[in-house]
Amino acid sequence: MFVHCCHCTWCQRETGAAFALNAIIEADRVVVTKGHPKTILIPSLSGDGKKIVLCRSCHTSIWGHYAGPGDAVSFVRVGTLDEPGRLPPDIHIFTSTKQPWVELSPDIPVVADYYDKMDYWPESSLARRAKVGW
Image (tube, rainbow, N blue to C red; front, side):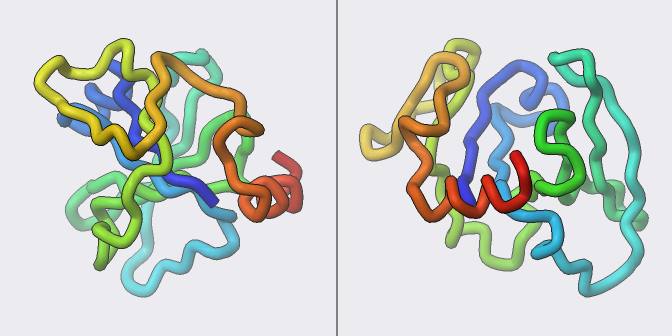
């Protein structure tokens, strides 16, 4: 539906990197093709916590479920996909806390914190989002 490049300090801590790149997609479209991932609950900035789905072998975070949309929507870590280059960010969020050495493309929207989905999401993605009740 949409790809976030999140520069918040929580994502930096969780990933051990300068940002997290998450592709937001309906959970029923996520298919595990090998193995049996493990789900854990971790704290979140909202205080509601979030579910993180990990590879049982290497413990890499594969996707997550945030409290707002719940289990209906998955935030897939783009770097875990076979072709991550096919999913560039649609927006950079929480750039007020981005690392100063990260340079952002002028072609991709940038917001200091969060944003109103109506201002950035395409109509087709908004329709898909509404279908899952988020």
